[in-house]
Image (cartoon, rainbow, N blue to C red):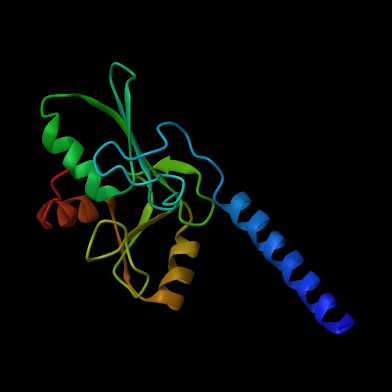
Length: 154
């Protein structure tokens, strides 16, 4: 009986520790909390989220590159000041155009059939490729690739 109680206590502690670790790893992201187009939780998808800033300093948050394409299709004529994407490792926003991108591989992407992940450091991208496969790409390449994919209607 004592061993059962100890085992249950350990299980409860492990569950709490994992919950805290997950909550810390998936902390809240910058506004908005949900993707403008598909309403997916941007905190849950913090490694693929993007933020578009227009010249009037208004912003649109999305869960993925696919939803950035949807945004660009809906607001033709708007002037984009910057496009940021989450670094896959740190989850910090970085310039999408200067990021090192990885296309494909076994790690499932967000809102796409062909995964596209961004990295600040090329070495991190290469380590990702060793683990999951895929190939290096530029923002222009992943953007053009995403434009050719079926866009979801939101």
